[in-house]
Length: 457
Image (cartoon, rainbow, N blue to C red; front, side, top):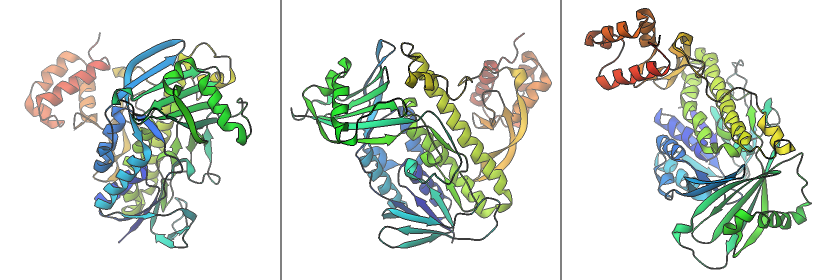
């Protein structure tokens, strides 16, 4: 039986592991504990993504959403909420889900990887992985899911502005605090931005994000004092720094947006942050990691079972990873543009214009729609199907409301106007001929066609 080896046990690696098990593969996953106990704020969309991936134990540790405030461009906003997750708890829950599903989990550090084969190389080579304890693992296919820690030096990359995030823990000496005090805050600063989280047990998690080239950072021995002074100098941060002191040493991590352009080969694939990592300001880190990871099992399955379609599968995967990267990059750019006070400062100037001037969402008109053959996920494999191409969805829309969209659009183009469309689709037999089975689906189709201006004079 084909052996799948996954390096990395976070949400991305875990999602691929469960997906490959569902397709009938034997899966081994190698992971090591996080070097620091990070806290992250996630939205309901991320929670839905984790649920879709199958993380039951992982989700059991999630707290209820708490208040999130933002101080941006001189204005305060407290309308939003987010769930503050402790990544070590989430990752531990994910590993429990994997083991319950029959995934063999090895808790070790990876020392070396050999045997990766390029996509156009037809050699039958096993991937060899050496662990820190001296154990050697062999697999038919490897998934690189170690996030930003995955080796990148040998791969072509596209990078955004060089960014560094400094994380510092604080703790209140007043003992346990009320649950109502769990909260988070984001605030813009002249040379960057800060995010702060408060947990009910008195722990505080403070993060400062700056430009690597523009920041005047002290030597390592002075970094703790530097971070403390920076956070104490933020008036709005008093709720997080008051009655609290820093604990331990700050942790620095690179948070530069990076797209690894070579992300797939004949016997390997990169997923999650190992394939592309976005600016933390967009707040979509786990979501984007899951986005690539949930598509990867069908791509891997195609490479293994239908090698004649390898190029098709690779094109599907590369296009989607690149599309996700630039979509999230533009979301971050738009957030940076909302801060108008310091646009001439290096940090803000570098990020208000990257990656380009393209809008995140484009206006779509009915006359711009086209129907083309494109790769999609179908029955656990990558296959070509007719999809609807729009300016906002250049990779195509295959299904809408559970039915193929292309036949409906083709029919709408033939009918040319809304009156003829409504008359044709009033016949149930006509609806069935294009896949529409019930009124809810027909209403969804009508609503979408209205949104792109079908029938407008």
